Amino acid sequence: MMRLVRALVYSNVFVAILLTFLTVCTYALVGAIEVHWYVPASIFLGSFVLYTFHRLYKIDFIPEDQLAQRHSWVLNYANQLKYAMSIAVFLQLLILPNFDADAIVWVIPAAIISAGYTIPLLPTSFGWQRFRDIPLAKPLIISLVASYLTFGFPVFEQLGMSALFSASFFPLFVERFLFLLAVTIPFDLRDFSNDRHAGLNTLATQFGFQRGRQIAVMISVLWFAQSCYLSIQTEVWWQACAVYGLIFTIVLLAFALLKESWAELRYTLVFEGLILLYALVVFLFSRFHAVA
Image (cartoon, rainbow, N blue to C red; front, side):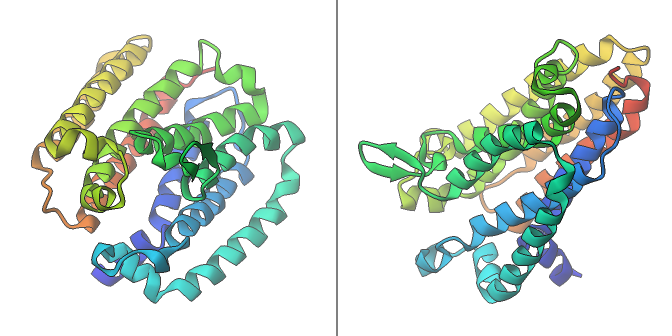
């Protein structure tokens, strides 16, 4: 069983499924758009390719003493992952004609930022750097791109980019961004030791494990406040606030139990599991307050 769990997590299939489900939740939440199957399909294929590329890129150059369990797994199954990436890219090309030119144009910035997270695309006085090398940028980039694709993509694909920044949709985008930011920070904390050896200036290396956890908790508070504010505008506001309060309590419990000694698989199962819980709640409650 654990072998299957490791395969789902380390192959990036699990995170691709999560992002796809978040995209489907957006269709349930936004009543003004129709379900276009090729959008969540593209999210699954694209996220799988990008995450797998990130794992494989220069993995042979990682010092042996810095190889985490996920790196060792990827090294063992590198060829299979490359074949799977090739199939995913081929399928993505088959899906591409379903999109109009405007939708493709607005996806490009997310694709560039995602590629620049792994490949040095940023010119600086110290040479070319990755976007993740920008101090404190890692969780911000991940949560922003994930929110943009899982919430923004279904909206602007049908209604145009201006709709995303309207009073109806932008607060929902902010709410998703805050939640994803809060549960992404722990992965910065997980990589504290390796990032410090690599000389990266991350939230964890800058503030330490305990302070980084406190920052994540404060962002969780902001997310809960934003969720309650949006729920108050619905007919079932107290039920929604109660359910979001339950999620908030579980998030706080996860941060309270979080330890530096946790295995990396536990980080994934707990904090990506929270994303799954959040997505389920959004999906179930969306029928009560769908945005027209």
